[in-house]
Image (cartoon, rainbow, N blue to C red; front, side, top):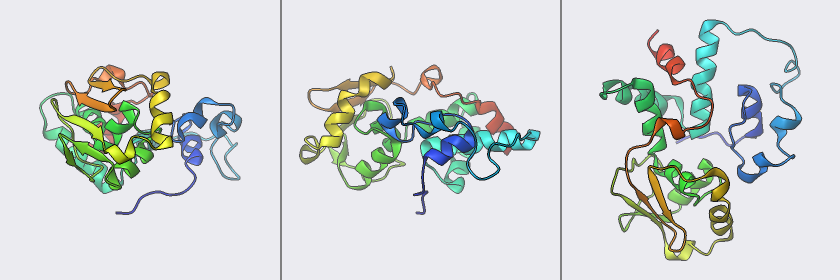
Length: 208
């Protein structure tokens, strides 16, 4: 499947919000968004006014870029959330949070969701004792997420786990740093998705 492999700092600048796509670098003074907090391109510093459609489009694009999914896949998530009982926007974010690559990021196994995707694709991650190499695999309460023994000593993994306290592990997950094992205690909680996301705008975008 195709995926974006270009400069991710431009995505933060385009959406006018820090998306934390480069891990620890986003917390330092080297962050491109802090240095140039305006959209990329030669017309980036011009004032721009979005239409109602544009506001909803940008919100949808922002969430897509945070979780690293393509349009067709994102639309499928929305339709599944729309069919599920509950608030559609919250159900949508819950599905995205439950992706295996996102869960690895939230547990601290990876510094970014794209790194989490790479861990999963390269068969470093096991769910309930079985290797799973599908980043979009949805974890559920009771699942045990572990790293393969050969992967636990990797420098990037150990560095990421050491820095997980900066981000914090959400309450719906539990991390055992000693054994590098995570467990899913319950469904994701909307209040712990701290990025400024207005999911209702996404619902309005697809419902127009």
